[in-house]
Length: 247
Length: 241
Image (cartoon, rainbow over all chains, first blue to last red):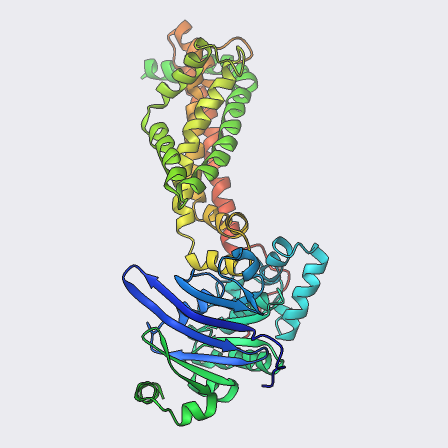
């Protein structure tokens, strides 16, 4: 994707460290994501990719290093202000089971963005319609398939109009036949110019949709580059080995 | 056998005491119980949040409170509050013993409810809080809107048990001495028993307690089931993939 020279990257990470006691999960990660770019993060479990994502909305506070979202340094900022700008989608959807689908989408609009009821519902329905979920607006989440639930979770995050969307293994908990549903939504979203950072095990999806892939290994970015060439022709033995295992 | 029936089920005794039980007694029992239950629930939710705090200085006083009021016999707490406070010159309720009884039972109920709510809130998956926080909700908003309502749903049956205990403990107000018009179920029945050496009035009072506690259980169970099923959906559920 092209970016204006002057615009700061949507996400900029410098020297990010994350440590749990003696365990170093992230060791000096540097990463830029341009506005409108889709970056897929791949790697073994325990390589630090989910932690990296959680640091970006301060769900995990970084031990040290710098994170900028849209040019603004977020470490040390009020966490709620950061999170309203960064949408996140989780592996297990985490819809609120005691609320209808539409209420799941409106609750943050009302309590965080302070929209009125009508305005919030209109915004929610716009998002739900976009993903073919309008007919399910009054249902409870447990009546929905996993694929529908994850699409609602994506709509819920998008309704907050975030600058960046983070996907933390958004399809890992889905039955194989439902994965496509959610990947289609992510594909549409990427095409619409949303800035996306997705931790995923779907290598084929990364190859097709991502502008770039980032391969993490032992808390570091071991290899990164344009999606297609990096995945088709890995430079490092580690990535070659990883791809041989998962493909 | 006649003696037995006469002692416990004397119709004249029962019919004689019933008007006082149903008008004065039931009203005051319900008054104490409802106020204690409501304050106990509110206090219990607040204490549960404090018990779950990350900060030791917040957790410890709440812990101490819960341990003390769960650990004392109810009769001791009622006496300390209802007799002790006024004797020490603290008379928030003047000479109204029902007020002190409500306070004492609410203090106990809050301690028990706090542990019930804490376990219910802890049973809510952590992903719920993460999702709410990642949408930009401040911690207290996320707890109030997302986590606590689910936690309460988890513990409704356990809470019904606590409500029943609150109803029954309202009888302890008899320790504080009640004037005419202030008497609750047990006090009325017990006065009668002392005067006549016949226990039928107590049996009648017992039936009045059951009249409250048994429907209470069913009401909470009904609420529990309704919340579990979710409200009937406006649109019939479609089995779409």
